[in-house]
Length: 170
Image (tube, rainbow, N blue to C red):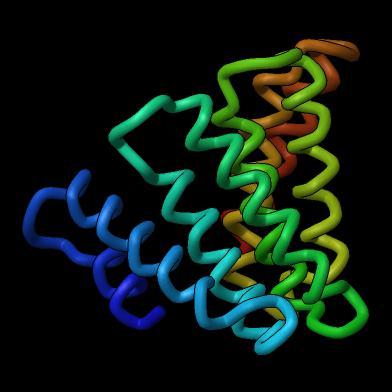
């Protein structure tokens, strides 16, 4: 898992190759760290694998995002809001980001779901408890509100501005 993390965060080299190698490392790790044998580690690797798929340059973009969403949902099978609230909030934010990048499906529904995930993350991440994460999710929520197809356009823009202004508080 650590090698996968290092490859995913590597600055030098070919970014596409680094991410592909990270995915390979995570998948091999999951052969050993199964949900039954090491559930917490398994969930962590699932989240990291989801992040790698979200950032993957090669392959089919839509399939990569679908894979990321599947990994994040698996991670939430073990790490719940009650047992690991900060981890849970991170996965909620990651799901929101993945849905914002999802190409296929109903765009309006994807954005609405992303908004819901960001709002869930903000149930845990507050300005006081996790200021940087809170600000990032506020920014992402603002982006989703600007991309929102449904609802009153003027209200969506005003809500987005409120989110962006909140990020300046940190």
